[in-house]
Amino acid sequence: MKMTKIYEGSYQWIMYGRDENKPNNIIDTNQYIVRTANRCLLIDPGGIELFAPMLAAVLHHAPVEQITDLFASHQDPDIISSLGLWDQALPNAKLHAPAIWEGFLRHFGCDSIEYVAIPDNGGVIRLENVELKIIPAHYLHSSGNFHIYDPNAKILFSGDVGAALETPGAPMYVDNFDAHVEKMRYFHQRWMPSNQAKRNWIERVRELDIDVLAPQHGRVFKGDDVRRFLDWFEGLQVGTAV
Amino acid sequence: MRKNQTNSQFVAVASIAAELSAVMDVAKEISLAAANAKAIAFRAGEKAKGFQPITDFINELAKDTIELVNEINQHAMQLYQLTVDEYRMTEAHNKFELAAKYAKGAQYEQSLNAPRLKAQQNMQDCLRQFNAHIAQLLDQLGEVMHPARAARVIAANSRIEASQAGEYLQSLQAVAESVDNAAQVIHDNVQRCRSALSFITITE
Image 1: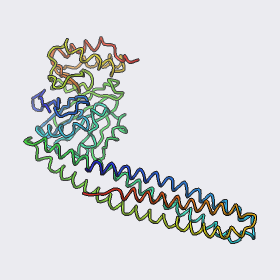
Image 2: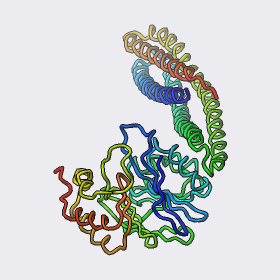
Image 3: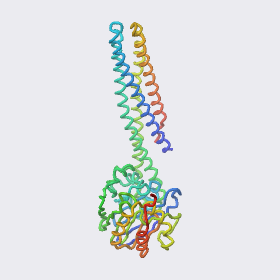
Image 4: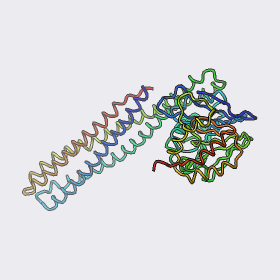
């Protein structure tokens, strides 16, 4: 599992991905943690197949007992099918996840972990002195969907928005935006169902001060590539399967 | 090894549920046959006097079987839940061991020891509980065999009584036949349940 620090201040953002031992027939995912002095938040911790390498990777940055929070942007298996395993590893943790998916996500096993249901208008996750905003991103692509914005680190974790279908071992950052577009087009057109939801999200996200846009698949956008991505996404017709 | 064992547990518990559902249907058939026999015996009057108490017996046996099967069903549901728990515990235990292997040299590798130990204990507890439930369930299944055996004896008596019932002979013999067949079906199904359970070999 490759580990990349994407923010270093009084706390850290670390990205995990490109697991070499991952079976070829499952989609590659990016996991993130926000690590403060005594706590750790796992963002979209991943599927069952990824649980062991992900837990092992996190142990480079935090002990098990300090993994206090999990966040699931939506209900997909590549996001959170590992929940039943985290439930046994972290009996005192909280899972922040969309309210509308609670009854569904519990199928993965959630007996010990506390399910903190996020209402449709979002909310906040506090990790010691760090305040992370939960940004609604419904229908992008899931009907109950959230992103995380860190106003201090200026990072937007954007879930499936900005995702790309990459070959194994692809670099962590977008280095040539124009070349990267073709790796994102099909994903966004096919998985994102609503142009209205897309426009609404772009309007709200343009008001945020973002240095890094960090999706759950593919590469991370930095600096001007964030604006380039928003412009490109704005002009893209989505929901093309019907 | 454990994974295949757990898969066998799921199959065994599902087989039991299917067999029990069939036993329940047959027990209801016996109950219906008892009601039918009662009506015939009433019409036959003096000619079927000896048959009348037998119909009550048949009805009681059907009721006992239905009650027992209901209890066993509840037990089988608990066994199913235990199988699910055991599957999850075993998965967690195996994944934690794998994580420990991958985490060699990580700064916080030792912090995984407590969850690993806990997962192992949980898994062993589940296995112990599972074994205990299997033993209880086998006992309960043995109990269902008793009314089934008694039903066969009653069927034999019914045939004798039916032979004295004149023009009602055929109807009452048909009742005896149906009770006998039903008892045989229950016996066979319960035997299959027991075989399915014995098939599971539990090792820690």
